[in-house]
Length: 274
Image 1 (tube, rainbow, N blue to C red):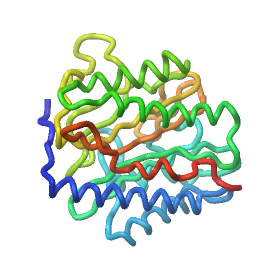
Image 2 (image 1 turned 45 degrees about the vertical axis):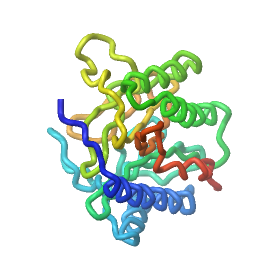
Image 3 (image 1 turned 30 degrees about the vertical axis):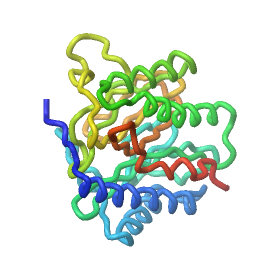
Image 4 (image 1 turned 120 degrees about the horizontal axis):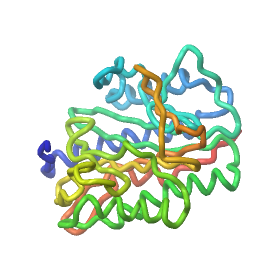
């Protein structure tokens, strides 16, 4: 297992600044995401906003094995696409009723902020509102379960018990949160569900320590937690085509609990005018 970075106070302050840039990008999204806008337009505006704040995208050009460099400034995922969506030559304009997940990663002065939020174009149906509320509530519940000296599994138990035990929704399998700081994906990996067999999530008993900075991100769908992905393409879709949400905060582990660096996202409207 890779070592888990522990940030010093100066590094933490730098990450607060990067997280604030991410919040400012989301503020722009709230102002400009409307029906008729295309993913390409939104992606360009995100890049411009990052540039205005002397930052750049952590995602553009990002590479993992067997996939081409990521082609967007941000991950922009619609409806059944839960994560890693991006502009394409075949894209459609956003329309009223779309659930749009916007995941922004900002690199500023060598440190990273990374947070996602879900937006609904126009007033949400009762079912969509419940799904969106589940994403936000599960994020809060999981963070509330974190204690210095506790283990990563405490987060997953709180999130899974709420989403699947109480609400009857489905957490996406195979994806989760991660450490963040100087690199986009630091150790540890943080699943949103309990491991099903020994060795599935080897880091689940890693202890929370002050100075750890993590990006925590429940991904939830109405129909199934299983996903599909076309060969050599980035977008991750829900296998049965059901609608999905994605919410992500940067969370610092402190001596007494946690500090949410991107907490201001919770004050933004998530049902946008049409």
